[in-house]
Image (cartoon, rainbow, N blue to C red; front, side):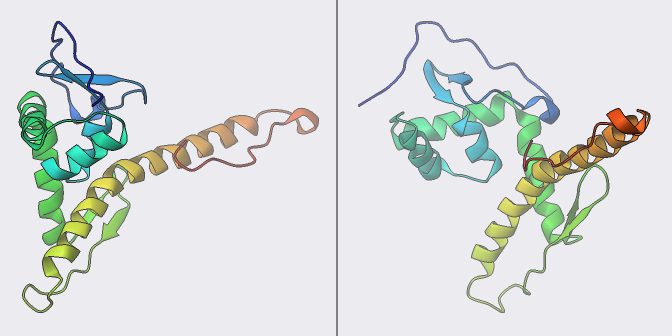
Length: 173
């Protein structure tokens, strides 16, 4: 078994949801065990202890199911605004039935009426994951588009022979 442990525990600072951007190689410490930001992504996409255990194992970190339950409890105890954000986002999927980005773009969710389909819970859970993803990916896309407009406006100030041209953008960048 591969398990990273450390001698001293550095607590995770409380932060706003907007402060969640972390480098890919960063670590978060819980109860003496080091786990990569895989835990953060798993939480945002609605993973329970089983899925957290699987996700960490894919990264080479093997923890028991009870340890993963503690990770989730500690995560939400140290970052309560994340749990609030997730619950509020999920509630919006059901009522009013859509999520908006910070710039007002909407993603609608057309769920069947409860009890009219066998797959209601599965479809609802999928909508929850998509809604949480849309909040982050949609905000990123909005910011990228806004930046492209600002850059294009700045480029137009250059004289014609040396005017730079914005060719393309890369998804998620």
